[in-house]
Figure 1 (cartoon, rainbow over the protein chains, first blue to last red):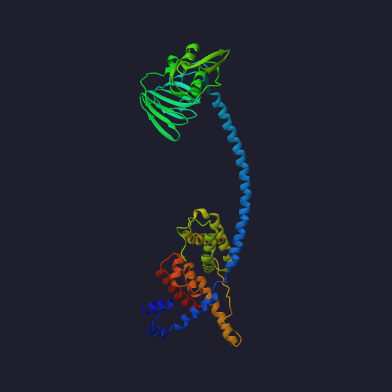
Figure 2: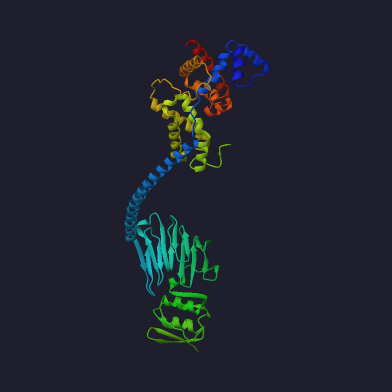
Length: 302
Length: 174
């Protein structure tokens, strides 16, 4: 047992002087020494790391070339797959385009639309409304250019997209006006969320959001439904240019505004069903005169 | 040098791979050599193991690479052997000693002795032979061997000792 300990220590090169003497006393001492010394003859042959890594690297490169060839094939297959997917997609789109329902109103024209979920839309004059009817069950999304009044039955999210921003509701009554000169959302019942310029505005009952290129305003209204439904338009502090734009949605006339200042502000209302009264409603407060020439209205200062 | 554990998640980086090769290729080669002898071309096994490591580099963390390399090299060699009991043949790579003035009889005796030694070595278990030769022929410390083979230092000590005793008895008997 003691012998074993000494030998183990010797194998670890940890013998002290006395222990070394004791080790040398052992009968088998020369045998151990010889065994240990002769072991070197069985040393593994030289291993050339350099040539090993070199040949490894060339193998790796070779394989990578093969892989890149395979990759080219992948691209080829990916190309085919992409074409198939694209084809499928186009087919699908065509299908959904075929499900695209579109409404367009002409000047002075309005339209009452009942959506698949029994929500109602009143589309004002000179406006377009699009939606994908076969996706309506999953996605209640509309695109509006112009003005429309919505009475939405409660259900999933109902979204109105306009060039200015989006209006989201769950079920409520609201009006969206998206015209060239500005954007207006009015909430008559419930609440709606308006996403505009990366901001979100929440409108409660009787709230109105007014947006034009210069400002965003929120104000209270008292009316129960939009004026246009009662066939007139009320404008507040709008430039004459904007007023005439609004006018053109209801009357098929052109204006000749040479010689007058179109940036003057107008506040007032005009009816949609009587051209003469409508023209007077605008010109009288601004102290202008008008002259009809076929379909052109010439405006001039008094 | 420590294996960059946090720096690299896998062995796909060329630098990591080269570093692993530098660290382990020789030990791996020696391990296979001592375990299976020269007949199974340890150099090829090293190459195979490193190629496998490269192919699977994404799945292997650098600190796991060593054990991966050793088990791959071990297994690929075993696959070739296919469980046949083999007679190990070591190449004695240097002449007994600078031979000029040696007594011919002494040379003969030395040769005899090495033959016996070789036979005795081949009778050792693989574990014992690898450990013993890594220590005595390669000059690796107990600690280094323990790390390389993933065993305790105590186990290394025991293996070397029993190998020595077994060799001594074998050679005496022959």
